[in-house]
Image (cartoon, rainbow, N blue to C red; front, side):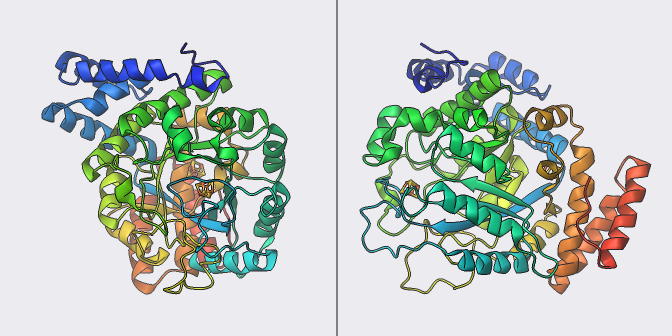
Length: 472
Ligand code: SF4
Ligand code: SF4
């Protein structure tokens, strides 16, 4: 039985409720009156239920779809302006005891090179990332209690935060590791992580169990209830996601929103971010085997409807997606992207050699961080290296109330300008610097509060003079 507040996975992600929602969406896909009502509700920026969002996703009326895209763009502008937060993944280890059929790190893959970074190697990777200009990382490891125990992850986080190299610093470490215990989540919280990220892969229990035939990840309930345990362990910010292409996208889309509703109803705060990865080719993995792969158009629609349904949740796309696709979804709702990424263990120091096959998936967008920053600037976006909220204690419900009221923009805007300025001073190429300075000049004038504008102008000057790390 469906119960949004239950702590049992099959009750808050209830199969029958998803099936009924799918039926409801199918029956109403051309119901102009209902679709207009949902869009009217969405304009209040208070979000939509999974049923309402499912109707929008299914809608087959061209003019209504156009209205939907327009609204997604407006909501994106209202909450996030032209800011795009930058991050990079850091793969610590590809040892894994699970048998996920879509991932080359599955334990039966014998021809992949297994690697686990030592603390010295982590330091080198992080220096390379700092030299690119990154301030925010997402740590990734396979699940392996012997090779990658929680102590290894904690030690690695400590190492990363401790590295001071030139003007660089990693100021926020998000962590994407396997579902674990409340005690381990508390340890991660104490280590100062930003967001705990865990992708559900698919919400369909039957498909989930087939895709995860062996290893601890096989346990659907343990995996699906992980965010509840993370929050019970004191982690305020969690990041959800599904791997589109594993199951039917409509089912997973509904499951994703039900998960968000559950966290909000039961823990008082929904997901901090939602990621929308699509399956990609990799060693030992053929995406053609996954016949549920979604088209670029459907992908764009998923992003647009998510933007409307959860306006206060950051949306993330990685370098799995091409430049063209990223450009399209940035406009529709994505607020955070990775850049200059390596998806293999040790890949920032050693450029992957042809025969090395230790990447988790093929990167589609291979541009350097500087090229991506300049591309964003030329498109009129403001790349931001801001990490201020977590460091100022603006997390969990405190963060969400600022986002929902729209007040967070008063911090995001100046922080984006100041962190972009840092990037331009320390890492940018000449053309990026020129474009960045131009954008900063234009954007400073748009800061509505005179006092804030004055402080930002002072800090921009101080940054040019060599000082670092200002934030609101
Ligand atoms: Fe291991 Fe994660 Fe890959 Fe599964 S998806 S094989 S858990 S690294
Ligand atoms: Fe993100 Fe907070 Fe910085 Fe805004 S001020 S970009 S919400 S960290």
